[in-house]
Image (cartoon, rainbow, N blue to C red; front, side, top):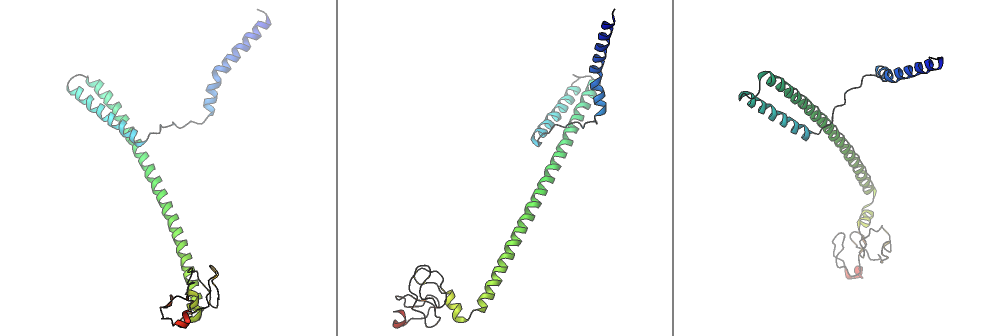
Length: 202
């Protein structure tokens, strides 16, 4: 053999060895991977559990009837029991995860709802306090005039307004008892209920 053939054979042998051994070296370098457990939902696991329980019961009946040898019975029964135990573990783990997740979600929703309610209640209390202080600062005539609506459209009118800012109705007529605006055709004040005389209403 010539030198070129020996070099070619050596290169082919080294390449083949590298190709065969490379996956083994890479696997040794990689950290061990955790086995991936199949994700089942609870209904699938319950179905598998029921099937395994039925298989164990059938196996016991076959053994009692003498259809299966004792060594085979023990071996198959052990296999079914291990599978059933694994299914029960998965069911327990899945139900705990589901319960924990649901409890956390419910707690978060309740906390969020409570915070929103607290914010709304605080805002309403602030508004009510401000309105009470504002009403307390008004004189009785201003309070009566402010609370009295326009007799034509019902919009609020301020004390001393001659016309309604909403509909433009004349507010010249006022109740002598509470100074609220009244319409010319009114016989009673719509704010305090006092009887209006003919000259006030007209």
